[in-house]
Length: 118
Image (tube, rainbow, N blue to C red):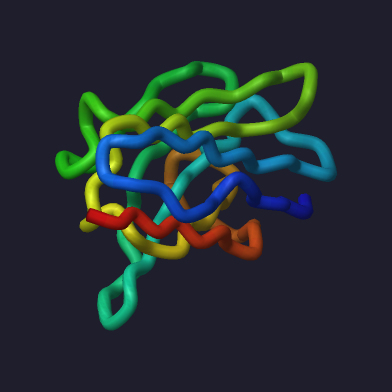
């Protein structure tokens, strides 16, 4: 599976962005979509995960109630809706797929930069 992330940009604090993750290949029912981010000088962190068919979602505490992960079956695309953005959300965002709940993400998109100015 090949993943293409897009939708990043430069916004002001309080604004919204929607990231997309287009998948080229078959996504099986057990697959888990993940969004991750990495800020300069920091380790990569998990932002949100979604079981592709089951729909179960998990969020990092830092983005809960502000970010929403979703997917469109027909378009084979995942999304991360980001509202009320903060400067600390600035990072390169990556989407990834794991084959199952073991969450060993083996398919990765190329990353999209999100910059939030204060």
